[in-house]
Image 1: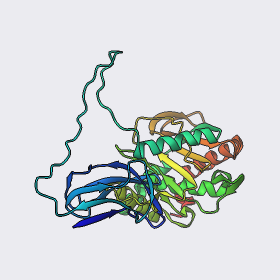
Image 2: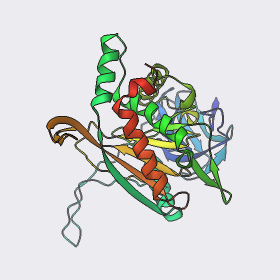
Image 3: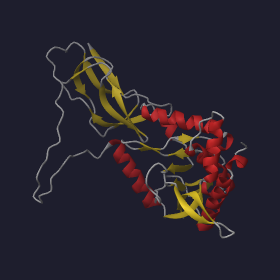
Length: 328
């Protein structure tokens, strides 16, 4: 019996997918629910599992082909099982080139890695980007986090900063913008992409309408999206519709990041590691405070430096006493 394998629909908005890599070749045996092929849609690469056990009778389309959903892409012969042997995996070899450079490993530049690379090159090619940095006091953020923890509400620094950034974007809408068809569009909806790094890649799931959500709702969404990434359940809908991106590098030993804008957005904000530093107060006394660095990359086709400075200043002002601004 022949079982047909179809181009799947991984998300509600998906209309087509790209074959990135066949994990089996014709003649290989495959178990039901064993990964058969990697499919790319938007920025996501998902593994499609075999829908039956048997021998891969025919692969109808090569790697790199983009096809509409429900297209038959392969056929599995469920009658052919005995004696089938899976294809051996290629092992990386140390190869000495003429230049005497020893190769540790070769990795294909395709799929998710290539998609990210292409988007970043597109971003730099199409928008004149510049980065501004400033120092910010994290005392108020840490105090709010502890205050909520004392009440049994586990909220992270990223959660608090997402809401703070949302408030600052409402006051500075030129940063919550994009160039579309030769028009600068300023968005009322604050759809904040939150960068989440893994060993595989950097994902930027989107929290929609931050301006309408309280801190606890945002915290729950951040946790849910993070769990989806760990379980490989992130959908195209989770990754689309962003108007601004926030990247928290606070857990890493990094102070300043010149981030690349996620097109078609007009800006991206990165927060660096927090360090305890000696600060000279207004009365010339000294104190030790937790300070971090805010780095904002902006598209100068959309805005000049003044709105960027205003935006960063508003964030720093809210960070001084975030509980008041967040109505907590």
